[in-house]
Image (cartoon, rainbow, N blue to C red; front, side, top):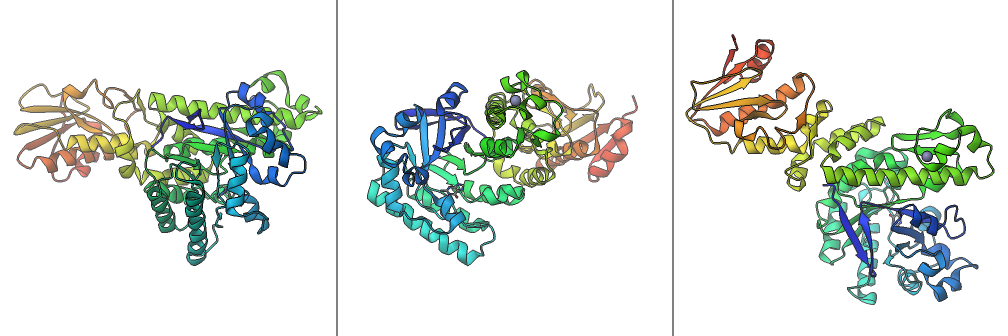
Length: 472
Ligand code: GUN
Ligand code: ZN
C-alpha cells in the first residue's frame, strides 16, 4: 500500500513519503534554511507555541511563517492538541487556533482535536471522538470547504471508532488525514496496536487522501508505516534524541556513550569520532544533524524501494530490528489479502527472505492467477525435475508460488525471484498453488512428478493428487 505521491497545498508541493521535521521557534537547533539544503520540502511547527510566545506572537502575524522561519516549502502547523493531551487544558478554542494558523500563513491547519489515550475505554473514546468530529464540522462551516484543514482520525485503540471516524471524515471531503494519538503506542513499542489502528483508519480513507502518522519520527518504523499506506511523518525525534545524547539509526538507536564507531555516512559521522562529538561544545547540534540526516535518508531509501518495487524486502529488513516490530510485521502479513489489490503487478524482483515472504502480496496474487490457468485434460506438474512429453499441459514449479506454464517463465514474479535452497515453508505454499490448480480443474487429470528428495513432503501436502517420485 506504499505509494509515491505529491502533496500540493498553497501553491507549494512536497514529494511523499515525506518527513516533516518539527521546528520549535525558540530552539532552532538546525535552522529551516539548513533543513532546506538537506532536502526538506515540508516542515511542521506548533501554532500554540507561537501564540503563547512574547517574542513571536505578533511578529509572525506581520511577517508570516514562511518569512519568519526562512523556509519556502510547505509549512504545517499543529494546534496545541498535544499540549492539551499532556497538560489537560489550554487557553485557546478551536476557531481561535484555526484563525490564528490562517493569519500566520500556515499551509496546513490542524483543529483542536482530542488525542484519546490508548487506555481510554470505548465510551470515553467515543465521547472524545464526537468532540473532535464536531470541531471538524465547525472548521468546515467557519472556514469553508477549501480551507486547508487537516482532519485527524481519532478513536483511541478502538478500531470500529477509528473506521467510523475515517468514514465521516471522508464523507466531509477532507483530503489530509493525520492518524492521531499514536505517540503513546509507539513510545511503548505497541506496534501491533499501531497496525490495527492504522489498518482500521485506512479501510475508510480514500486512496487519494494524504495520510499523516502523527508524531512518528523514528526511522526504524517508517518502512512498515509506509507499507500500510502512510505518506507523512513528523519528527521531533531528531532533536529530542539529540538532547538525550542518543544516536538514531534506521535499525534502532544508541546512546552516544556506548558507541566506539559511527556507523553512518553523513558528514558529521565521517568527520568525527564518538569521542570528538562527546567532547564538543556543539554535541547536541552534531547529534541532531546526524539524526535528521539518517531520518531523511531512510525516507529516500523508501522512495527508491517503492520505485523499484522492493518495499516488502525493506519492511522485512527493518522489522527485524525490534521484536515488537517483527510481531507487528507478522500480524500485517495476515492482512495481505486486503493489501493485494493495492500492490503493483510487476516489480524489479522478489527476494525470498524467510518464512514471512511466503505470505507476501505477490504470492497471494500468484495463487489467484493460478486459478485462471487454462490446461488440457492431462496435466503434469514437474517439481524439481523435467517432463518432456506425454501430457497436454506441462507445468514447472517454483516455490513459494507454485506451478507455472513455460509462457510465464520470464514474467514477474516467476522470472524475477531469488530463492535459497527450498525449505518446507516455501514448499508448503507452492503446493497450495498446485491444490488451487486442481480445485479449478476437476475435469483434468493432474500428475505431480517430484524430485525424490521432496517426494515424501509433497505427497503429504497433496493427499488427493497423483504424486509420483521422479525416477530419472
Ligand atoms: N501530535 C501527535 N499526536 C497528535 C494528535 O493526535 N493530534 C494533534 N493535533 N497533534 C498530535
Ligand atoms: Zn551520521
